Image (tube, rainbow, N blue to C red; front, side, top):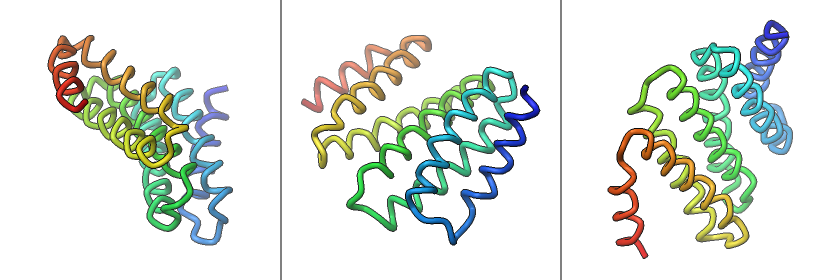
Length: 150
């Protein structure tokens, strides 16, 4: 089974680099890539998951630049950052995991500012960041920053 997951990851990696694919198909590929990356992490191959996530990040960032008025590309970017955080965490690269989870929360925060219907996504990303920091014993600092932000 995991071999099939790896093959799918390789295929998506190539597709995401395609310049001829339409934006909706690329966004769908990014969403599927995030799911495959999660499966690769469960298969205990975080480096392969991270390789796929990096492709998803590049594709999502390109879509956000090219179509700044479509929120779905920002949603995909936030999800890709979340998966990057998980892959780094699985590989015990905690500083990179924190940076990725912060980036996911930041993208979701900007998304919710412009499109209020995405506030639940922002809350989810902040909850994930808090949980990660709690595991590292840093929740108090985050709570203080969030109170100061309000």
